[in-house]
Image (cartoon, rainbow, N blue to C red):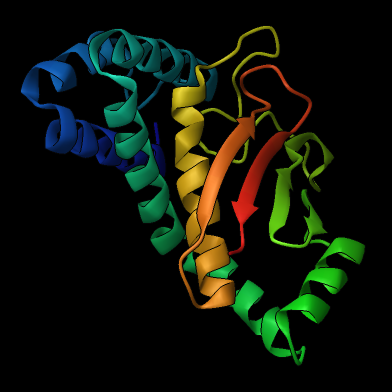
Length: 195
């Protein structure tokens, strides 16, 4: 396990402790000692999948969403270059509508959007990325194809998508997670409420 994966797990664990307490954190970490610095990424992905299942068993849905959304907020900070590139693209246009039309026609690799009035559907298509993968998240991109993960985990991506669009628009937005490639869909879908 590399430093990046270790940092990501620490972020999840810190948020679990912050929002759900020590007991939930301990339950999530069960079996972590079997994952070491030399573990391959598939073994790490399977451990994360099982740990999220334990989180689902231990913590109510509202708290799980808060835990993972906050991980996504942190991910947006860590990956600020993605947000900065989007903001830079936005500045090329006189208004948001022109920007959204351009993004629909020529989206960044591995993503696409559908925009209709006050709603925008933001899609992640990790299998269509320049290097096809299961998920953009480094912890689960190597999860075997025959395994799925609880939508709880994907609330992290929802938090990232929220910060992404807030950076572009310069104001708060509300985002809903509709489907996830890790949970069995062909692609991830987030509905962004623009107003």
